[in-house]
Amino acid sequence: METTEKSVEVLNDLIEINNDRVDGFTRASKDLGEGDADLKTVFESFAGDSRRFVQELSQAVGQIGGELETGNSVTGTIHRTWLDVKATFSGHDRKSILEECERGEDAIKKAYRDALTENNGLLPEHSHLLAQQQQLINEGHDTIKALRDAQV
Image 1 (cartoon, rainbow, N blue to C red):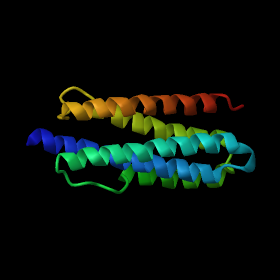
Image 2 (cartoon, rainbow, N blue to C red; image 1 turned 120 degrees about the vertical axis):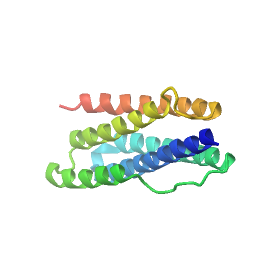
Image 3 (tube, rainbow, N blue to C red; image 1 turned 90 degrees about the horizontal axis):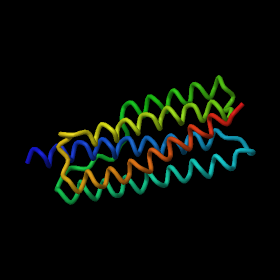
């Protein structure tokens, strides 16, 4: 029973941070200008990935009879508030938006890394699911970082 409870806790934490990621990329996309269609496409794609991850994680929680979390994390809400404040001062420029998105990607990368540590209490099938999602999260982070680095 302890393994099941730990799995539910870890999966719910990842649901919350993926919800944060969706909200963050949606907010960042709104801050972009007309000439930033390329970033809007990237942001929409990453938000779509996280929506799919939430569905997969929710199914996993349901399969083991856990209670599902559907909100956002407190730190994610704080991060989005910081994104709003910073946008006020930065004028919504591309580099600042990408820097904030990278901070968000750093947070979700850490959440997956922490979830997949040894003795994490996850059921094996959940570890496999998280490893697959983690690969796309890492690729997303690298994309955002490369876009940020390309800004002058």
